[in-house]
Image (tube, rainbow, N blue to C red; front, side, top):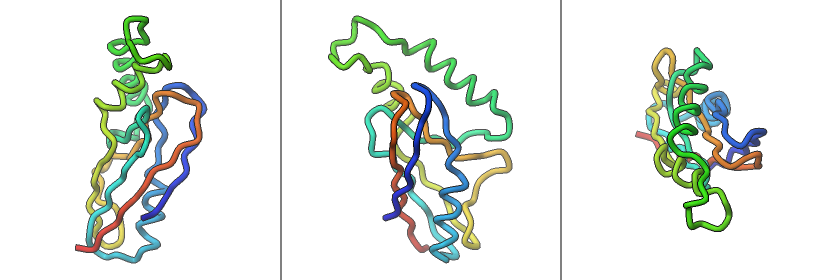
Length: 131
């Protein structure tokens, strides 16, 4: 298992971690396989989406924040229930194929760590398998 540190600077943000994951995959020298990217936090997530236009991440965060707002109606005492809901909806893991020792991603795709309760120091775990 490989651990990648991630530091957020905002309460809600998408952080491009594609380069860090690509580097880790390359170091394994696995020609063909897959990589599981897992976030072990209840108020963070991981997703794959367009990385060319930053407005995509802005729009995703806008939608999540408009539809899942902090609320005094939530019963969780820490005041971050909206973060837990966002994390559950986006998800804690993604899988990416590996071919020729590189991630198989679409032209515009990037892998994003999704922070919903920052700023914090976080981690992402990778499990890389040979096919």
